[in-house]
Image (cartoon, rainbow, N blue to C red; front, side):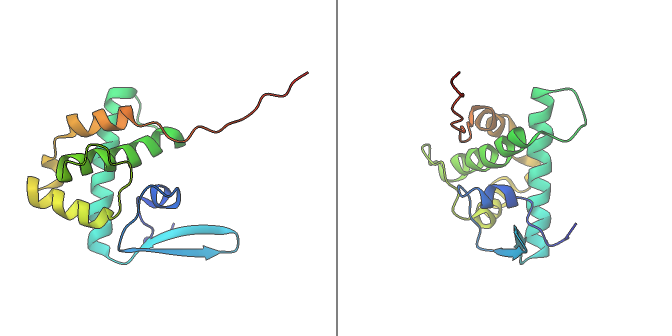
Length: 139
């Protein structure tokens, strides 16, 4: 695993999130996202772990990794919920700068551990990702 990978890579690649420190790369047919700052990546890793833990406690009683759909709920729903707390943008469904948002959250709440996760988890739970429109074959 590349230690420069952005913890919110999936959210950035799916398009509803962006970050000023993100650098996209392609190797063969695989696309990924690296972070240009070790400190910022550590902050994002911490935030994601805290959101994941709070959400997992409400959803399941296991230490297994979250399935892809739930992981996307945590990433995107959590960032949107955090943005609503920091910027009071109630209708925001896109996060334009993850790094700036995390910095603002740290300034407002003094640490990532002090964030009101009960409010962020509400946003995670309410988040609905894109539904794939699979048509059922007719017989």
